[in-house]
Length: 267
Image 1: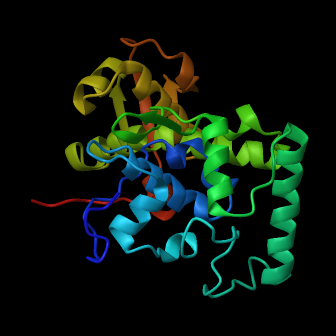
Image 2: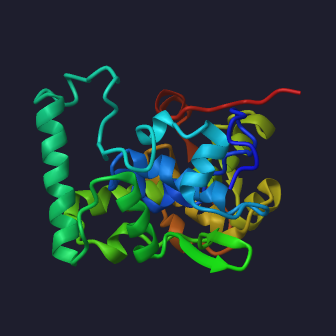
C-alpha cells in the first residue's frame, strides 16, 4: 500500500516486458492489454508489494487513462477519443469493435476460457495463461512474469491469417536487427558497393555477429529483393552457404533506399 495516498504523481518508473511485442499479444487482446502488461511489469520491480489497485493508486492517484480509469474499466479494442481511420476500417468504429469482440470471444470460448469484460478480468486471465504470477507472502502480494511470454497460438485457436501475421512479426523482429547491422556495414564501412566478394565468416567478423545470424540476414535480403547471392555467375542459396566459402554479394541499393528505413546516429 502507498504510505501517503494523498500525494499524487509518479513514484515508480513504469516497466514494459521485453517480449510483449514479439509475442504478438498486442494483436490479439483488447487495447488495455498493453497497459496491463506495463502495470504488471512495474509491479514486478523490487520493492513493490501489493495489488494492482495499490500500484494504480501509488503512481496515478487511482486513475489511469490508459486502462480506462481503473481496473474495473471496460475493455475495448479502440481508443474512444482516437480519430477513426475510415480508409482502413470503412465499416465504422461500432461495427469494427463488434467484429473484433466476436472474433476474440469465439477464440476464448473455443479454448474454454471466460471472456473478460474489465481490465481486472483480463488480469486474472494473465495469471491463468502464465503471462504473470501472483504470490501472497508475509510481506504482501508479489508479482512476477516469465522471461519469455507464452505465445497466443499456444493458448488460443488463432485463424490462419492472424497466425501468418504474428509469425511474420516475430520473424521481422528476429531478423531486423541482423539485417540492419549487415546493411550498415556494407553502406558505412564499404561505401555501398554494388558487388563484393566475401564470405559468411568475414561478414560475421566485420559486423560482430554469429555466422548463423549473418546467414539469416543474407537470406532475408535475398527474399526481400535487396540482394543476390552468387557463386560465379550462378545464384546460390544463401541459407546453404558454408562459413568459409567465398561468394559474390550483389546489392540493389536503389531497392534498399526505396523500401527500407535506415537510421544513422552521429557522434
